[in-house]
Length: 516
Figure 1 (tube, rainbow, N blue to C red):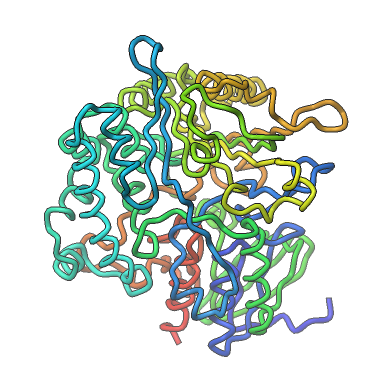
Figure 2 (cartoon, rainbow, N blue to C red; figure 1 turned 120 degrees about the vertical axis):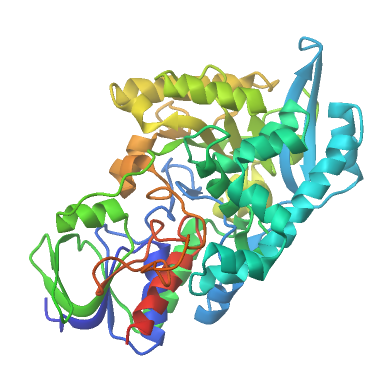
């Protein structure tokens, strides 16, 4: 390998955070090499053709964007768009022992249709009014807290004082979110829809403060909390990050799995499995902290295991619903199934006892209703659509004993849950591959660990933390620092990491530059 292997900084991991970190450092004049273990960049933010005979590029793992700050897009000159979904969510339900089929339809912005939908579900305006008040309070906090995500960490007291809104702060940061939801809302379905943002990839009960942390990150993104569709899929984002990184001078080496990381008083040395060696003053690790610990031979941080089932589908058309709602409305936002408050809590208990929940909580969305560009013109013209299903309360432990059998059982439970609200069984509209198989793939937490290195399938790498420090005396300034002054965390496992945001990459780069 005829390259100079001495650098100012080595970035390990070519996911979106690693690319962001590398680009910032290179633009600051640093000589940077990025080492990616796989044959392509992206990590969890990749687009693939899971059904090769169909020209449809699906975001296999991560699939929506909220936390990516406009500042990072502007700083790096990223040419990448996210699109607003017209519908926030749709939750089908039945009443009168199944005799009446309805659905709670919530637009992205409150309108008369949304107000009427709340009225039909609950019989009054009270729940809709409570919804507007609750999310109005959170929106104001999001607007105030979002800029701090790209600044040095503040103490809880300092950030609370700076933001104000002490009541909102209290119920988001200090009281169990389940308790807050029970106080603010009375309808089981509405309570459940609110709670889901605290349980994405997070295997806890409603009254665990870990749910608060998950809830917070899902509602403060970019100061709006809005979940948007990546135009062209996640792969388009990675392609653009590669462009800005290489334009800044970053050297990207694929198939470069790191096997050794050593540090001394002056810097860091790295060795890959194929024997290549690199040295630098600083190393930014954009993989999981557990992986760094394994390479270094240190103790791995403890964390919750991953808890999500991901099913990707290509359908020849959207299925009709028993409620009669237009499928192009129902699937445009987040389609909630089995996610009433009590169903979520019951599912948690079932999974905790080692049983795949009977009423498996699910969220489904159709990327192509908002952005058809991930389909070939021929598929789009023929009416094909993609569906992404995300199952909650499916921890990795459910799949340990018999991974394949458990995955089949979880997939069956998911499709049965979906079909109870459909006139057309989902199997009847799935695209058919040339070998007669259906265009559907299932990923368990164990698959996420095996495929992209997420420890126990944890999409956040480890437990989320609140975006502040608990008191004085912390060694964290940017949330990227480790016990070694030359090693920095640049991935989701850093403080304020998690989600497709680039925040961890930005903050790790700032920590390195502050160390000059």
